[in-house]
Length: 392
Image (cartoon, rainbow, N blue to C red):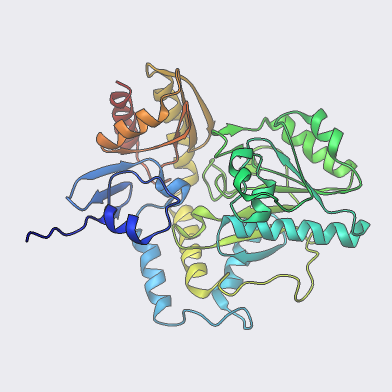
């Protein structure tokens, strides 16, 4: 009797809860902006694990820092002080202009922290009726129940009803709609400066400034979800720093540790309403992931990757705008969406994979580009050439 060894896809199907629609490739190695599959084929990565591997795959400096820390101390819990955690908090507050940090495990848990912090602030400021969070339609803030309730995508919410109450969504870039719902019951307004999963849709800078003014007028906190747009992704350390607006609370994750699980919720002193025992986490801010994040910050600074991000962004926009079949290019920095002239992004994504290029069909008509911030001029030319060939 002839027996065959199951493929990795067959083994995955038999052992893992089926929530992901995976592409037909198995990656085994990475280097900078390149990924390699089990057969040795190389791919130019313009997705970076969805805006995560910003300083490149298998980054030597990050790997060395993590390896050193792994041989010193891996975990003690937040019952004790940890030097890398405090050092990272100091770096993030200095870079952001905010005052305090709570470390979480990912973007969703960072946003859960922000929601709880805002509700605690509202309770202490105006009483228990001040608990509502207002967010935007087409937003995405995570898949835990609280973050999902803040997410303005009914399709993602439908099968998990009833969701926690106290969340309202209004259209983006419509300050009158926002003003119509923000009231004494509102603890915070929560937005992404560029809606990522909503199709790489930047909020207008004048809208964001008006939103800040509205929050100030009505004594409401402004939460900026910088999970995808932060850590240099749009050409500044944090996306709001180029938009003339400052948050009361901000959230980070994705690129913070270049692929290791970490999230962060930053706040002003005024908004830091938690007291002892109000919130906690077993793994958040552990010594290994915070060491990795410190190495990431060093890499971005020492290699001047913010400048490279802005330069490569201009190059991508210029080249993609000239590709036949692309009707528009939107986004900021290296968080870009190529809008197609028809809803065939899934087809183009599959063709790009066959051509050795990783992108993502974020919506039916939009292909997402979020390459590592280390991408070079030549690699950018190569990426657009492969993408153009994938359009058929």
